[in-house]
Each structure stands twice: as C-alpha cells, then as structure tokens.
Amino acid sequence: MATEEEAAASVVGKSVMVVGIDDSEHSFYALQWTLLHFFSPAAGSSSPFKLVVVSAKPTPTSVIGLAGPGAADVLPFVESDLRKISLRVIEKAKEICTSHSVADVEFEVVEGDARNVLCEAVDKHHAEILVVGSHGYGAIKRTVLGSVSDYCAHHAHCTVMIVKKPKPKH
Image: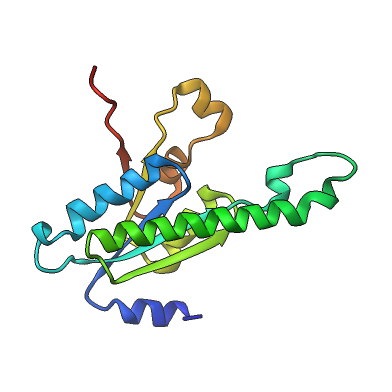
C-alpha cells in the first residue's frame, strides 16, 4: 500500500477528486455525471483531476446492531454479504469508468461509516473536490437516517459537490 507521500507524489500537477459511491442508483448517477462533465473527451484532452472512487463498507456489527443472543453466529454471513456487495459496487463503478474511457482511476473499499470514510479519504488524498450523490430524502428521513451528503458538506476539508438525479418529468 502506498504511503500518503507516495500517493501525493503520483498525482503531481493534478488535483484529486474523490467520488463516494454505494449500491444506490443515486451514487452511480453521480459518478456518471462526474465522468461526463470532468473526464469525458468533450471536457478537454485530459482532465485536471486524478479520480479516486471510494466505497464505504459498513461493519457487520453496525448492520446487525444490538441483536441479542445468536448475533455472533450470523456475523460471518453478514460479513460475507457485505464483502460481496462492496465488490459488486466497485465492479459496477469500474464498468462505468471503462464505458466513459476513463482508465486512470483508483478504487478503494474502506470499512466504516460512509460519512467518516469519505471525509477521511478527502484528507488522505488531499482532495480538492468530493462528489456524492443525493438520495433526495425529505427533512424527516434525513434527520432519522442521517445524510451522508449533509455531513460531508459540513465536515469535509474541501469543496463538496452533491449531484442530484433529476426527477422524471410526468
């Protein structure tokens, strides 16, 4: 694994853009939008950004919560499922990048809460921009579930771009 200095040295002259993804269509839309607007041939011969795609894998205990007796028995199965989901998310992100002819991409899966994982990735890569999708939750759902984009907008040490998928017109 590269040290922070090596990671910074490998992108000399290019700013870093981190895109946070999960298994939602909103995050994949945000990745596609970012590639189209910042990394496509129409955006210029070469992008001024180094792209880092980060996916947060929840911990098994955060998924199970305070389940009572027998919870320890299911932890290996939950861990296996979470690993499979993470691999699927990264594979889909790789397919999207390939379909947009973007090859110089770094992919990371980091275990933890998405809010912290993305803010830490910004610091680790010295990113200038963090891109996240918006699920479009209302105020109540955002309050109950917590909003990754809200948290990142307030805590990330860089510009945060929240990409919202347009609602279909009737």
